[in-house]
Image (tube, rainbow, N blue to C red; front, side):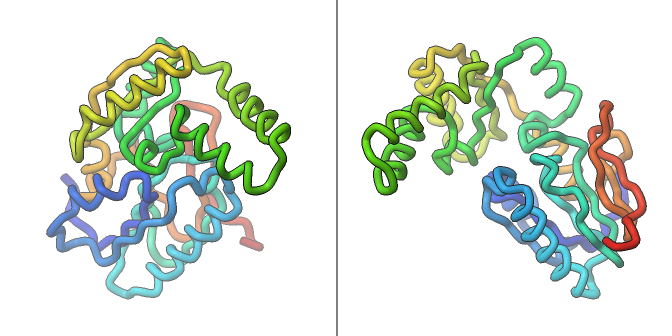
Length: 246
């Protein structure tokens, strides 16, 4: 394992319990910040909130590196500015890889099981995962703004947006009540007419990220005055010099 750096950790709230569990008592973590889950639905807002958190972390002279507990996440991590501290992020499209522990494992599963919608503890906790609870919440929200016909239309549109999925796969890292969460996922799958799978999680990737074991295959270390860019290959992301006006 690499020598520990004094780091700031900026993480998505979807994985907050897992991060808090693994860093409990870790003396090398100078700051621990959690942003609201679901920001990937609004990448511009995600960039603003991440940028503000990075700026605060860089203002702390004790921080030597900034760890982002995120994946590419709708490209919300592109164009982030940092002038002093390197940024470190997992080579991942989204948080599922952090639960599975390996981007290649994620790719292999997706190739073998196209049409998979992933459920994890954070998304279940937030009520965002497809199923009867989500639909009931959407109906309540729409009913406050629209008439009955419009509500039915919007619910049908939401169902159509999920039509290409065929399977609900649950993955967690063993905290909380994983059996209840897996059962909930199975219930959602049955309601949607999908298949169900429970996939074992692996904390190795998340722990390596949090404890500075940053090899190039699994992680991207972004030097100061560089930005993150999407790649079209298995690396997923790369660093390149920031534009002059960035």
